[in-house]
Image (cartoon, rainbow, N blue to C red; front, side):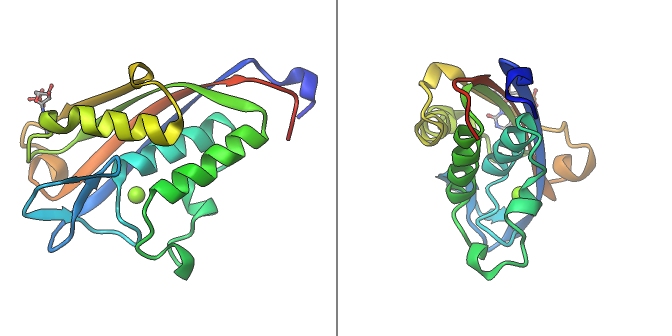
Length: 169
Ligand code: C5P
Ligand code: MG
């Protein structure tokens, strides 16, 4: 894209879903949540980090998480999803943008997550290099309806705003 035509602000949104599986850890936003079940996946199945990663890739129109981190790649097997997010942040910076804020929703029937809101927010803020006040973390049940409501999966949604900081990329 013509550098002069690059917009000052760009938004991105991301969504992810993982199947619930016993014997797996429940890791949300890099935080281990005490639970008798976790999420299935090739990586650590951190549904929130995956949604935020896709939101950032979307803001820069750089495709999606599967394109950058294919689940067939041995290098990403059981990877901490923080690595996806860090790699994506490097792409954002390389394209001359910085993250302004992020907002997110985790949809999970149980366990209750509200006691972990500060820990998840602070960890996501640390990884994204944002102040905690620029990181929204929301939780919802699905009211017992559908795969999430029946306790078979967990979903996350994220929205990000990025701002152009320099001519680059
Ligand atoms: O889905 P619902 O509107 O009933 O959720 C009510 C509140 O319960 C949410 O606003 C959130 O604070 C909390 N919650 C939670 N952990 C979940 C789901 C919801 O802490 N897994
Ligand atoms: Mg995922």
